[in-house]
Length: 371
Image: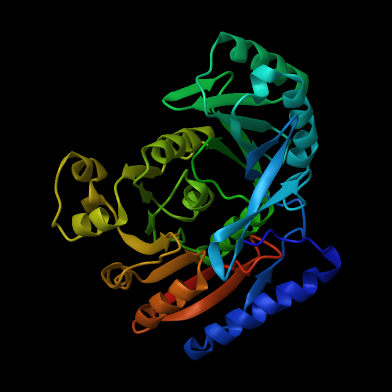
């Protein structure tokens, strides 16, 4: 992995390169003009994890750079600051390191540190050890919480000590609305909150009009995570049915629905593949019965799959909907899926969300409508 080098003066150049790449990759599908959403060039990641490297009386944050010609060769890169991480993380990095250097209890066999922060500066820090943690560790960690104004979780093998709570509360401003999200330690959340706000606004815009008189249609969402899109899009539809396989994410999504006063959405714990079978009447059981699928009239499906994209069967399932919103973190698998989906649908909107500046990563949004 190459560690991103942040050069703000080159941001426009790197963004143009991503735009050119996407326009070339998807030219065969004849999409409309690519919409490009910029990120702050630096300090954009709200969560990061670092290995802790011990060297005699010193310790420091580390990442590893892999030799592309020999993946077994990894070079240790020392990081005292990290320009892609949020300003809050950069503020905490030296403070936490100094505290660990002063305390044998906090530093001994400390293996990894994970930071989870919010736009408002809330911070949850997970300290991961290769040893059991006892009362003395907890006493010193609580003192450190108070000193730095953070929350701490201690982890080791078969051990997880939550000192205050295991989540932060992110507040996103989207189209004049403040959306509240519980983000739980060690579960997936969008790392670039600035871009997340723009993605949610775009998704709201492209699905607007579903509540006009005579339509009253519903949204089905696959891979909903903690309800990131569910909450932002709920008032564009009569009802929303969202599915997610992670038990932690489902619990968090339900908390977030309540926190935002969303009453027209339901979260089902089920994989996308299982849900496809349920829609076809090929899967039954308690969770399927609780969904009461017969009461929905789906006009739109939103899918935000892993990097592997969707298999052919899932694409065929999506093609049955009048409108598809596809959020992708991998243009290569997105292009493969578009080769199937454009047999029945045309691309109406196409967007680049620069989730990770100064990396090759491209986050895309595509709106497709049935031909």
